[in-house]
Image (cartoon, rainbow over all chains, first blue to last red; front, side, top):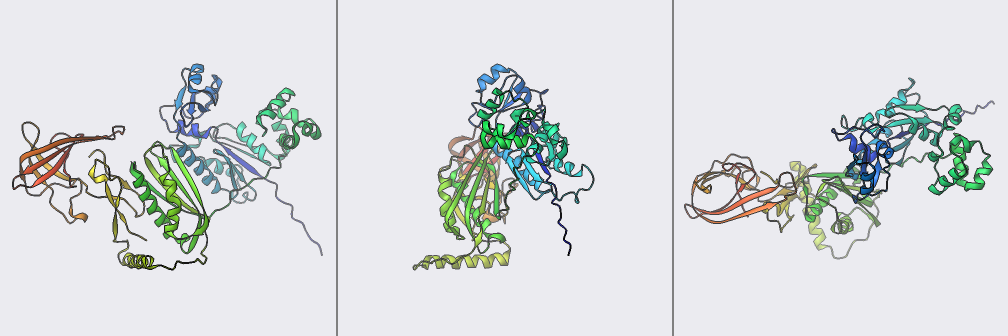
Length: 418
Length: 116
């Protein structure tokens, strides 16, 4: 009997890269400013969340001596024409998530190494994209998110495709904004050779040691014997040596599919009182538990996200000691996080995510259940009414801002929808 | 009306504010104070009140006395800060009304009745 062994497909890894994503998002959304982070444009820097230091700087700003970590006063002294932008972490995070989701539409195996740096395993996709360059175009199109407001070129996204992770990253860094660069396995070493050694995945101290040894380019490192590099840099040196030769063995770690239930509410005008936030999240919890995926399931983790009107983000995750599907117990678990939260501004959007969904399991009930039974009867009646009328006709009054000088802000009706 | 009421979007689960102001038609006297008011007719809307923006069409009342005037200025940091001038008035027949003028609107417009 003759057996044939199928040759494994050669790895194909893509790296979609948006340099300084948070800054690129800010520039892309400001029509008055040149978009992108190119060297020939107006120097711009993104302040950190405290508004004291430079978090990211455009190439034009870097050329004028601005560096991340500088105080804003220092940065403006180096570059008087510097445009300092206020960060909106929630907006940047939203765009980064969109980027990942868009790449996942092309490949099922996607890893987000950092915001704006998304790897995808392209093995087996040739059949779906037979025309040369079609796969790369599809991946670059993934950066065309948010319609006209954030075009791929506006974000400065670039794509690298190669047989190893590091080479794909280097190709993406080397590509022009909005362009792609594919490096064949046979050409990887020659492509990498002239690139600067700073691109290697080494710690700052090791980078400094590399310079002291006079190893300026990846080619300089690749020309050394592996044992000599490992003698200086240890195991990380061995990895760097392989990477410099285009043989980076680091595999992709695709993000695992997590079954989850997400509910979001947007408030206009933004919610300024904690009571309003509590009531809204309580409603979101009810809605999430009514979703089909959460029916007769237990929840192990709850994630809360709040976005302020200035696009600042707040996030907390509560992992329950014991999974539960009981609304009251879940509310008891997440309420303290909301009561202690410091949001940093009025809340424009709230998101609740139920994760770690497990099968329902048996639980010990209490002995004294009269109140609970009455509540169950009310809930059952409400469900009947909901079937009859399409929505719950019952409401309850909640205090939203009882201290407010504006009478209509003090109390509100919310659905009674168990 | 500046400083609108908080509502929360989403499938169901909205916060519906209670005690929303009802539009009024007000005629001003020479000093710019309310002299005559026409409340909105009670409609079939939920809660028995007219919604903001509904045309006032109820009976007209002469203002006999203004008992109290006060101002509320809130949320000055927003693009549309909330600025209201409240009047507690007695009308013919002895009935009392609390009404306010949305100061972002012209003097003859932006009048509302406020129930507590």
